[in-house]
Image (cartoon, rainbow, N blue to C red; front, side, top):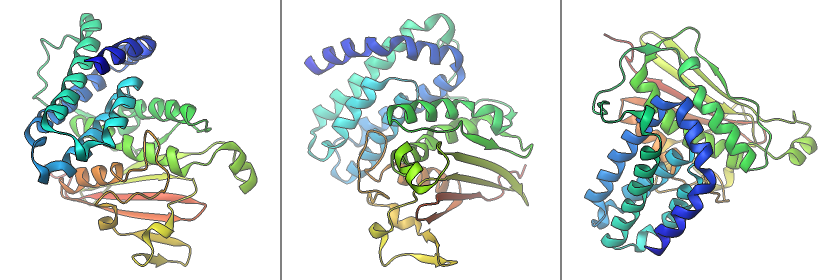
Length: 310
């Protein structure tokens, strides 16, 4: 209870930022809340089972990214702390984590109830209709710029290119939540700080680019940054070289919490984010290829088969 009380006090510092974000991105918050509620329900199911601890770890990491996207920074920091201790948590302690997250969401929703209208909203139904990703995912650019400021790094607004493709809104909303993991990795470990960029002769601001294309009824998504690339020493002996400088990282190397960096930050470094994103794509019958070039870029090439079939 003491931890909950101190959390409630510190949350007041970010109330205005959170409420302003919800006011301007109401539908995204509803989607985030629905996703988080489902994750918390799953935590209750697997919290006592030792064989489910790896899933529990991924859930907490995803929740941390979710709440951080709406400037719920103190809750994100709390989840970052408990994430490192999950292996030793008892079931009552897992329930305490769940209760703190649920209470924080309840407080946020109560403050913004005048326009959230969750009583009339049916979260079990996916959002109807289609939208261009360049319009639906503007939230990601705000999220990335906020993270870059926290990390004292300079970043251009995210470039989202969709070539006129329109995609189901429910998929875009879910993609948006999982893409925050890739953004966290790019900013935490890929994009260099200003001094290092100057030393390397790079542009003073880093860049993240996301593209969406249709190809023979398949959806092709490319996520890339122009940072330092992955630390190849962590993948030694398991790599596929291409053109001598570009290296492909096999998907299975991101399992078991193997991170592409030796450093841990609030948003990345424990090897969970990429694994969660890959699982999201694989569950939809897709594939992901990861390429990196030391000092130049990291790129995720995603292919969702027969995505546009009626």
